[in-house]
Length: 138
Image (cartoon, rainbow, N blue to C red):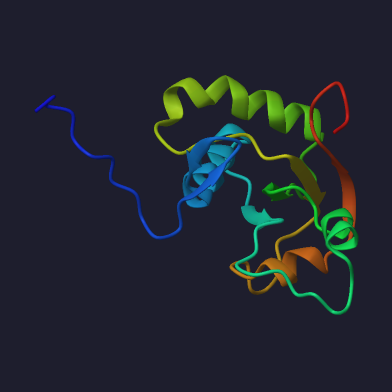
């Protein structure tokens, strides 16, 4: 009736902060924004059904990070800070296309892991620096 087509979203898309987000699109845009450095984007704080383990709902909520994205960037010898990565991505977002939202957290590591598609491999790497990339830490 309106002529507006239904949005096409793949199975990896999710709603964060009221937006439809594609972690793969965020990874690709951030990789372009930081000059082609290896990037991995992990979805954090989103679970199907919370594990109770006898904890109260308030304890579960306190232990679970807010839903969002964490970006890991293997910067090697390239000088980079979370703030620089964030600024580069936000400058690119207007032209990046659909599904791109800035991560809540940026984690800088030296080199990518042997298995770069696994979030746990990135989490085990030694962190050089991490932060929100914003002037006010969240």
